[in-house]
Length: 418
Image (tube, rainbow, N blue to C red; front, side, top):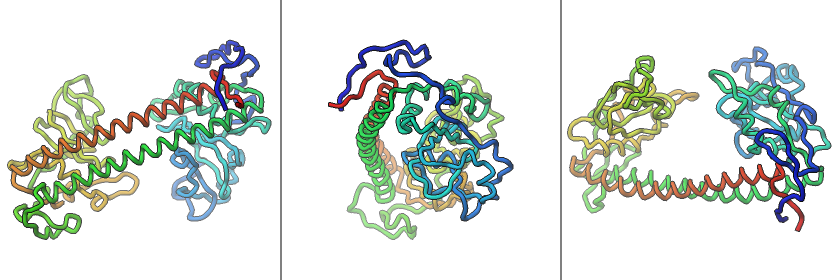
């Protein structure tokens, strides 16, 4: 294959599309296929799910490269047949039309058994004279995705109406070209995806290296020649003989964040922390000294180190670090907590204040705490820089992938046989 420009173009008169090859045509999705969705839940409740039955896909099942037919819920035959228009078929295109993943798209290439979708997913089914994989790339393109972003509505959960999807324009070259474009993009995106996967694995390896470095240094120290003793803590093992084993409550006092209703959401100077990080700024602060924030709900495994005055809402605990404890060292200690051993709740992981207080740490003298924290600051910054470089490469490849798909399916560049 080689890439070149088409011989002649015409004005599409469609926003975000511009010119298209002069012999390509434009059509709305509703003229070439159908868009179907579950009408509400038809009173379907989660307690109606069954252990065996008919696959019931939700948005998490279609967000990755391949549709996840394994980690699904199941519904009864009666619930399955009440919506025959969304009984899935091979070559159906699935598009999320609700929530934070709005615009996510996948294609049914095979069906392990009978399946349907929940009300957050639209089923797009095109006529057989069109090459479905080409249309998949068309909907994945920036041209369509920009329209999806523009059409988002709803005060709370973003939503895309079926009438909007039906009225989206699609660009249609002759069938042989549709097929050639799809095959070209299959090859090129697979090559890009492979590079992204390798870089992602590399970034994860460096992330694991960073965590291992923190775990080992915070529990063993830097001087490997000192005598060791059994910590009596299974996940820690041996620690330097002169270190003390202390509960978290001896290192810091855990405080509950305030109700978010108490926060003045205005352009103040003090950051407001919640389980998702900073979500606003307040005109007053709750705590002014260096502190480690620990998630009470949601992101419980992501401690935050804060050095300036802040406000914390009730999804986060904050800590008042005690005398004799170096704040940054305490932060590194918190990064070693195996939160999975202490959390409760499956849907939203949560931590109890009294449980956190009882977690045990190996704690060296203050001078050694400072030395370890300074060492880890330097080493983790070096690793973070490497990870950032890798992530920048990944983002460039993702942008290349996105641009390539858009330019090919909208006729900006031409795919031809060598």
